[in-house]
Image 1 (cartoon, rainbow, N blue to C red):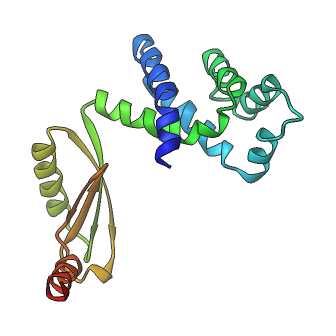
Image 2 (image 1 turned 90 degrees about the vertical axis):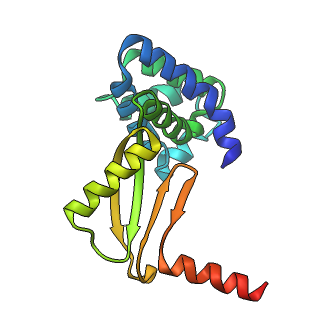
Length: 178
């Protein structure tokens, strides 16, 4: 996975710079998201990997499938990816583009998992605290997981804050066993 992101990063960065300069970040993000979603479909994935089709045919087919969101620049980008045999990188490119977009907007996606449903006040307090700590606008998504026993696990990018009872018990067990 890390290798894919390493190869995808220059493409994502180049597309992001073009989108930023032209003021079309949202449009590109939407287009890349749709293209990435489509390229992981098994039948299309197989067709895109078929050497019987030329790079231009693959790019055109993908652009046609996603015609509602694919711009002329998007088609040119798809052709460049196809010529370089990089269409399979679209999911990683889309993910990296989203990271560049969030960084540009000084925003961050945060997922938190709690043992119990949090109230609206608790959720707002958590979002405010995280926004202050991370110096970013926080986009929260939440879920509940009773196996945490209590507390919360917060994930954003590479940062994981495990304040769950399950996590604390695991650390305690590790300390006892070592």
